[in-house]
Image (cartoon, rainbow, N blue to C red; front, side):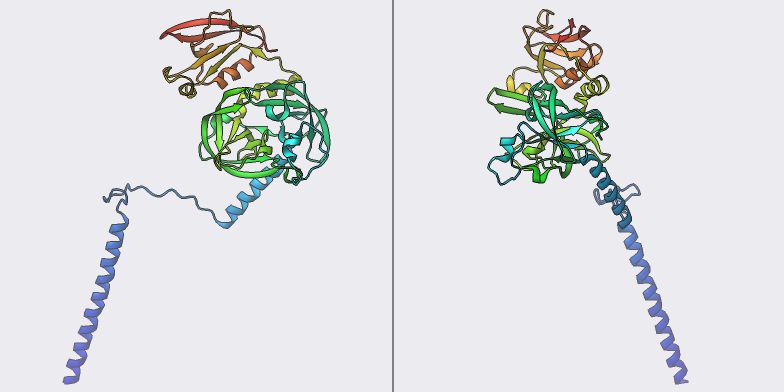
Length: 378
């Protein structure tokens, strides 16, 4: 009799313990589920709580990405050339001032028939000569066929055919944070075709340039943290598809990780004309205008919401007798809106000498139309 009661008592204790364990587990699951559904930003419950943005790569995906970009870069590097104003007689970085003495810079082949894009400060003025070092280490003579100091761009021609050339991207579609690569020849030829990576840090940047000719401004630039050294000037800034979206031009020496490239779209019409026709007759409107972002540097009393401010009118240019005045705000050329000097340039590059364009301007807060017959740029 005693033994039965003892067994019965032990069985009851076991059942009670089992129920407690099950209850604790159930309550724990409930509490976990409740807290996992709380919006960590607002502390409120709800099924619409935002989820963290994640990009997950497994090892195979990461390997595929690395293989793809390696192939892209290998193909692009073949299009990069070295440019020097004097023939190299010593190629060591340990030679004093080797980079400055040689005028060493970078260029990029943009057509199969030998046209190379670079900076004005690398290649020099139109009709000047330079030396081009190709991917196979062969050095050939080059001649500058087009040059623009204000844009810091130049096009060089070499005698060649069936060259591998870079694809041109669309610089109007770039985004901040986009991955980019810069390729160039920093320091000396030992480090030719160096690749650096980074992101697009900013767009539509304006910087002031101080040189022996005074102050000037470069506008509508792409800012990147990809390392750009002096010898990188004239090299390509490319996207993940291997398309050139900019031409590396300037580095801010006072800070690390701040370099600038000129958007490729501004020069596309000229490249296409040379590639297809072997020449480019540049139409000229004979003015220089500043974007609204530059005006505060020049005169803080000038204010306008859109358009570009006419700062200079050439006395021997077609706009001088058109009725256009310094201080006018150009808002349109024909029917195209204009908010950057680069947009005006790009539009003019698509026109021929003798074509007429209609400028819509603001003067004393009143709108006017002025017709200009484009001249030939000397």
